[in-house]
Image (cartoon, rainbow, N blue to C red):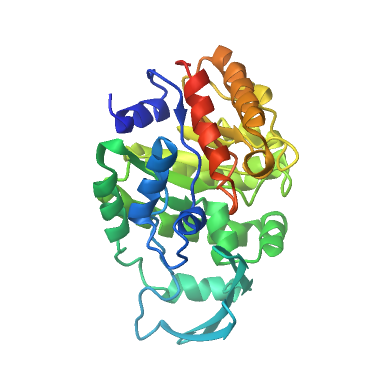
Length: 376
């Protein structure tokens, strides 16, 4: 059985011969590993997984698509201005339409040597008028540059799977279109506007998904961490978020692509709803203090024949500061907890590796997984 077959079987709730260990390794750690912050991560990501003996789930081959600037027409013309302060950058985009302008301002701030945070400080949809302009004049979704996906897929081969990132619908809207606090109020105070905005974005994401499917992507990592259990309650999520997430997940999986749904923080109150969304896999089972999900409780919320679970190993304190014995004990406890559940479980971290994580501790994670990883 190849590692690709193992991963796909595990993600489809089918039995395999051992526990898989596949932590989330992001671009920042790959660049730190090679001490090169300009490194193209596609091939080096594979080398990092090999170095530590992990099962390869390659997520560093995602494709960016900017709906405001990707396609321009005489009725949708975008101009871009950039300014820098050190490594940090501010990008201002102004789109001109026959009936007015749409403006967006995005900042990228480097938080450490190899990792940066990008966020909008001015959102393009500030009013119903802005949404009307987008619906009327924004060009249809154009052609994705899928070369990073195809290249990663070819390099990975039978060694693993690729799992590029997309945003869930609520994430997509709150990252790219509408300020989060306004969006939450819209749902309650202006439900028609909220529904129009969410539906508009959902349709555009679905068009992109068709292009992912056309190049043979077998797994998509879907970020659903914004409407988390600390930001919204179960009633809000069930009424205003779940219908759109469920539709996106169903459309993706009907095309034969597995959805790996990601919430790396607070999730406990939402687990009963998550289990109804229909995704084939869920992460990250983040325990306190950085989340609120007890592993044993999460196992009661997901049916072992319907959803594969990933995560539960803390990469913030345990992997950066723990001893070999601490890591071994945490892995054993996790696998002992999961074994009676009887479902598919992939040992992983609760989010991506931080910089300055000792290599010996990362090796300890892999070694403990193989030591205690009988088939579960």
